Image 1 (cartoon, rainbow, N blue to C red):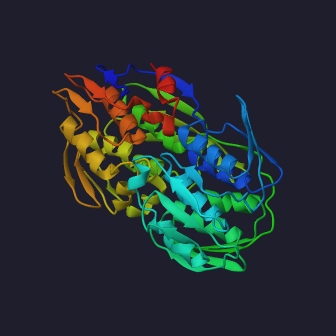
Image 2: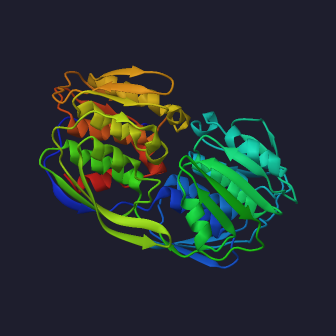
Length: 437
């Protein structure tokens, strides 16, 4: 049943403190790495979303033991060699992170194994991980999309690989396969999220990293075992982004978000919005097992200005551009965002959908395959009813639309479909939103 959300008025001014659920990238990585340790790993504030539950289901099928309670999750893994079964099917659901990463962990799985996903995931590119994993010795059919049949090798060989898309998922898949290979794997990777490198360092996995302006070089040596990983997962900056923009675009409002992951490879949204005149402060910075955490304080912001957004921020804001586009819509002038083809490789073609939502609102956009120009209108009044549907149940399109409906003046009503899409990444989104209303 397709549930929809109807909104017909702006949010009232607020002054609140909230926290958000655990970081999705860290939650999935914790699950997968914990499955490789024979010791018990414990996580607190693990994100309880469909994507993470899919990860837990996958490792249970591969032999790991999982115990979930209200406040924590325990995993006892099976070591570096998963239990072999015939005709095993793993379902990654909607999660590209899970689907691409777990293929790296299956590099030494000798039986054929089938990976499936939902309608959205089955449209997305898997060749970016198939190509390097074949170099390790794995075989695949078909060649680009799910469902995939994979057969690993009992002796994965180390490889040299250039990752030029800035895909943290591709880089991590290679790194996970390298754990099970003989020798040293070398990766030259375009800048992207570095959660996996930080976790590897904390687990004392043999790792050498050299950082350059546009890329990193990474060397990983295969290992015989993995230590357990006890972790308190900080809040997700991607989930925070909706409330950051909600506050910026609301009248006379203030918001403090507690204990957020502010890894430098993830805070592109903060850098971009500050350049546009938004009032954002990062407070109480801490270092937790290599990750940076902090509180984020946001105030309503007037006189927002357009931006010609430097592409250097693309990888560190890739999941947040939809709500950044809303700030551009409120800003004075024309904002330009370039080299964003990767947005169309997400749960939906997000660059296209971001433009569609703005057009429904009455904002002019100039769209190409990898760029968008947004003609801002600080005094926009939406005169028509707006219905958002058929967006492949993309959770971020849904949440972007909710924030737009609550912050842009309209004479009509918003009807936003596929309410349950938020279960993939942020199931408590509406519950958290109600705390501000």
